[in-house]
Image 1 (cartoon, rainbow, N blue to C red):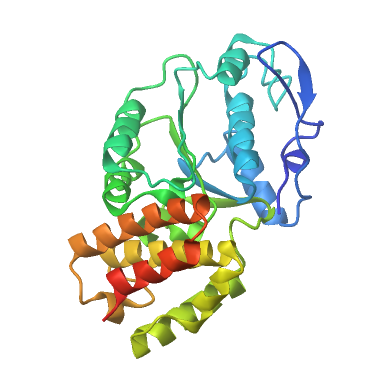
Image 2 (image 1 turned 90 degrees about the vertical axis):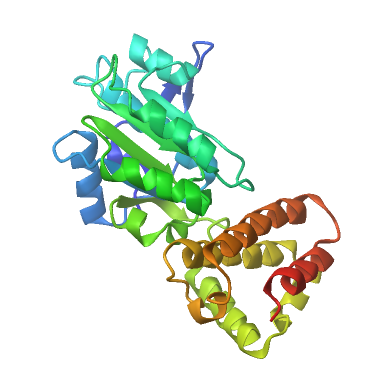
Length: 300
């Protein structure tokens, strides 16, 4: 795993809008020499890749790291301070959120990115860089694109234009369409956090869902959400990924089950699953809501 201290030799610091200097949170030590070599080359512009998926760690850490990496590319003093000086005009504009060549799209982790927002983002990225050597577009919670937004983004990903960089910050890199993921360089910036979920847990969800789909009933594992809200949310996020894959590419792990619905119906169910996640996070009777969703949207 790669941490910021492994990207740059000095202790990472940044200047706040008030002019104070602060030390950034520590990240995990490097654990992949090849990934470390690639990210060094990428940041120094030797073999800059136009699209990168940044995963691992916490969502706030990914956001902060994207800003720091932009500083390393935009800083007026980058030849002397590879990590960015934090004091020049370029660094100050980045930190304040006013740099015209740093397009940052933020959203709530429980919301999905709609096509209207994606078109606006892609439109901003179509404008050439003004002051900096690159135009950087950052999508926070990029794994939350709905199928229409993902297809709209794919056009920009395939033809981003000269000196454009696309950075996708994601909790679940496996939630991206294969056509998006195959065009990106993937970087893990720290240990897998709880928001991502372990691979073993994803396998358990897949097996349980397959068992339920074959039997046509609510999975027995859903009874656990009465004691653990996060398990219920994990179920919903797994369903979101599978519904999206089935709707867009027809390559869900449960494609036989999902084939009974049209692409439009699957997209509608995906959007309802995203809305359900928000309700599960904010309301008390989450077990009942989850059961109602399964019966209404997925029962055979």
